[in-house]
Image (cartoon, rainbow, N blue to C red; front, side, top):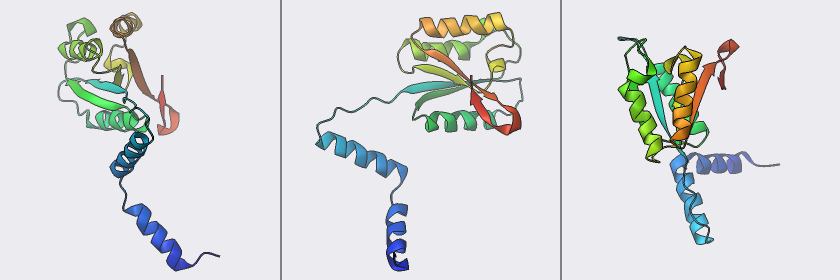
Length: 150
């Protein structure tokens, strides 16, 4: 049987280490063992909405989603251009440029309609991101408030 005092001491010891501390400790241990550092995968978050639309929620969800996968975020690009076709959006061009320059390996967005609600336009953007050397990743709302990747 473990005493309450021992359990409390262990709990306090765990509580002092933040996630950043744990990452640094792992990196130090890997370096001491002679393991080369693993480069973190990065994405650029792209969000688009109508003028005046609050997209803070989708931005936060995308950031949490990227963190859950261990992805770094090189940039968050927000546009409020409404139904403008993807070819006319400067922010989307910048997001693809992040992939082309190898600063990011993916463009992450919260829903398909932020790229285009027209399937052909969406597919064209996905191909453009793939030609640049990355992929387009879309989060979509599933039934019941759960998040699912598509």
